[in-house]
Length: 73
Image (tube, rainbow, N blue to C red; front, side, top):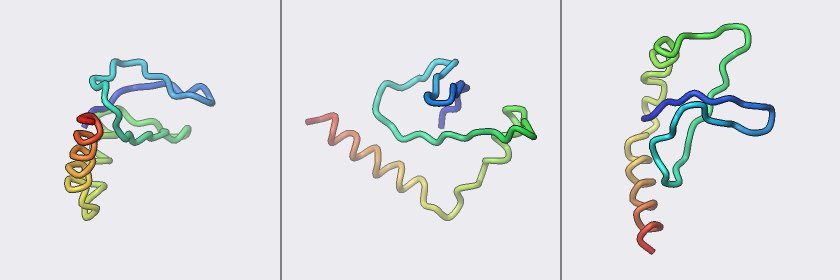
């Protein structure tokens, strides 16, 4: 998993850090609450384990296999 910082201007999300992949990939966008801001380390700690039971590894492997098929055409 890669985490980067970005800015949302009301209509577009613009990365302010380099993205280390060029391939088409699904991303998860999280908007922090306006009231409470977390340090990056705390945000990562809070998210760790939040997908348990959702078979995320299997979904990721299936998605990567589909990407390879698409790129190979």
